[in-house]
Length: 462
Image 1 (cartoon, rainbow, N blue to C red):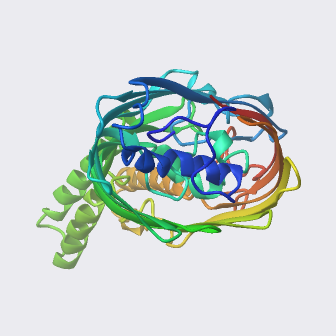
Image 2 (spheres, one colour):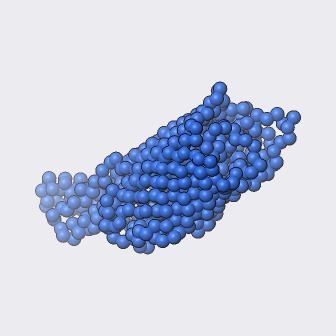
Image 3 (cartoon, rainbow, N blue to C red):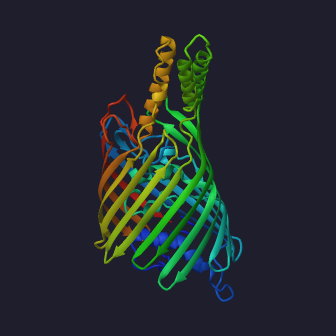
């Protein structure tokens, strides 16, 4: 929910007529506040100083793959395991809006997810200042603008489907909020509503390696984040493009510390051998190069990612088509780069909207090259340590490949002005049983790399 409360049975008509319910809510949350700022307060009473609103999803999923667990983001504590689970989609969000003056407001939003044991998390907490009719500045914590729907990804009612397609949104769902500031320029020309947004800040979250026993929870710090986004809402289509740069992403945990210590110790041993004057010069030079290569594997998860997204939401005569292409370029040999896309088509028939969709994420760069940790042939103990480190890095590289694809079919029933019931089937698959992708695998590879997921959710906004 962005700066305005969600519609209720008594809400006024949407700002952009003719759009489906999800787009109508997006319109209310993003564009209507501009019109509110342009209201003549001398002739119209101001809105209440404080206003409470919220959203909720009660969701149940079922799948029968004992090898895999499903997650909404890589920060999720409790997985949607085999059988019936409410951990993937169930969420409760509460938002408080404070209109401090004609051009000054504040927003506070707390969200609890079943997958996070309903621990309340601050998603938004910012001060907003309007400068004239077109420009606004926000300072504080705001929802991630990385992808087309990343700012409403937890508001189930705003999505035609149960959730934005996971092969695309697993990454964006992890960077779910940013601490910093943004500047928004909104302008209407004819029947087009434009939004330009420049943003900067930082983010911090945990990445949980649920495949490990015990589970490894690593701290991930994102600094120097900055980006630009541009969108235009027309009567039958909304277009958006964004690009986000990150100066530094650092991942730290006790396991990473131990890996770094092992690599440093191994590099020291290789350097000591390289200093032995009894060895031939060529061999000493080769050992020195191997020592430097070994040091190069330290902190393998650190990266300087770039996120790119181009998406659309088109509507015509009861038909809705959603699509997006995104690229994640990590700047890291361990994490690599991946392209993803999704396409969803729906048709409204009365209060029912059946839909189908496809989504895919594919890694575009090869796995981390660990050949620098090959054996020396000089010392069995040294070569054993190199092999152990190489195996650990190879296993980690396999786990960072999140390639997957999904096929979706479902139906949405809007049985009330602020409530929707959805039933959806998803088929998820990774490239092979030796690639767990985004699944949390509960046994050593190979695993059953297919998940047939059935979801039933009730979405409410109030």
